[in-house]
Image 1 (tube, rainbow, N blue to C red):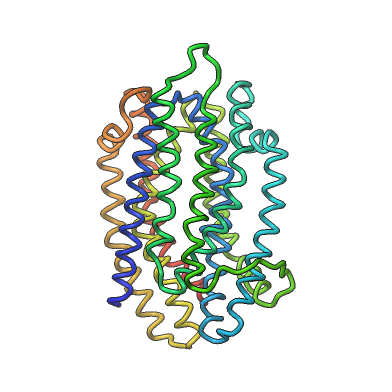
Image 2 (cartoon, one colour; image 1 turned 90 degrees about the horizontal axis):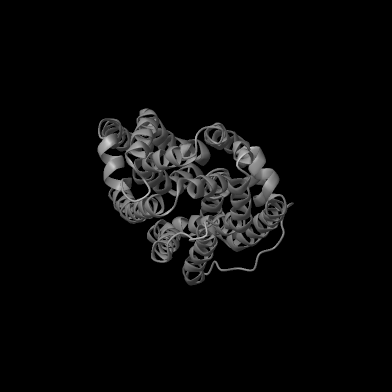
Amino acid sequence: MASLGRSSAVFAVMTLLSRVLGLLRDMLVARYFDVMVTDAFYAALRIPNTLRRFFAEGSFANAFVPVFSATRTEHPEQLKDLLRHTSGTLLGILLAITAIGVLFSGAIITLVASGLSERPEQFMLASDMLRIMFPYILLISLTAMAGGVLNTFGQFGIPALTPVLLNITLIAAALWRHYHGAPHDGSVYGMELAWAVFLGGVAQLALQLPFLYKCGMLLRPRWGWKHSGVRRILKLMVPTLFGSSVGQLTVLINTYLASWLVTGSISWLYYSDRLVELPVGLIGVALGTVILPRLSALRAADNDAQFVRTLDWALRWGFLVGSAAAVGLIVLAPSIIAGLLYGGRFDAHYVEMTTLSLRAYGIGALFHIMVKVLAPAFYAR
């Protein structure tokens, strides 16, 4: 368990750095952009973020790693062929999804946040932002697949560090806006946030490539819909799609309902959700990411005793630290929100409204953490 502890610690430290920068980015965006702009931005960002949870952090990743890890253990000579066909199939599917998203961005915003149509200027801003940000799902999904490969080879630091780059580009966009200020003629602004997301996705994928090359896994993609390994991954994705879709459907419903409420509602929910993601990422995702390759290898070796021991270790740590984190979010919600976001365009009323939603989200934090820890055991089997 010592090696798992070290790997979890490395992943958690890198994740902590990313989350801290993420909080800084949210603080700057909240202070330097009007809620009309942030509502449009976060409504548009929900779509690539939701698809990212399916492909990058959810269904695909959780199906790919067990198959890739098992192939490395049982049939190492087939490993590169599996990666070529998997990456090619994923790339083809994502290119089609991205093209549809770019062409029909307005219709997608209407579906996800139809309340924005009551404010045409805000609706057009969200639609334009989505058109620029949609390719992010292609970039981040390929990045996640690369991270899964590196994790299987025991390299957890670089994949965990990757999200830092998106935070850096968004921080740069917020500082640029602060330096230039809002347009004096009252015209719509905020497109720099969308471009920051796109550039962040490019940077995240680019960071992984040298390390893939070092592992000998930087390969030319090939379409492989009928490849046996690809079919196995797709088969494993079916149950994980259901598990991922429940939580993401809730988020989309929240965004849809918030779009019909007062301006600022989407932003308040987003900031609360982001704060809950901090302990979920540091505890649940860190533990789940580290144990998944190990559980997959143990399952492939039919070592059930060690499989149970590894899962038990992760569950105990997840429950212990997750309980404290959930209580902290609920009790300290006003201080957390005021300390991080209050100032500039984010006034006392915004602090109060965000506090209410954070307390509600905080109730479910422990359960989200435990799901992230427990789910890899099912995916590995």
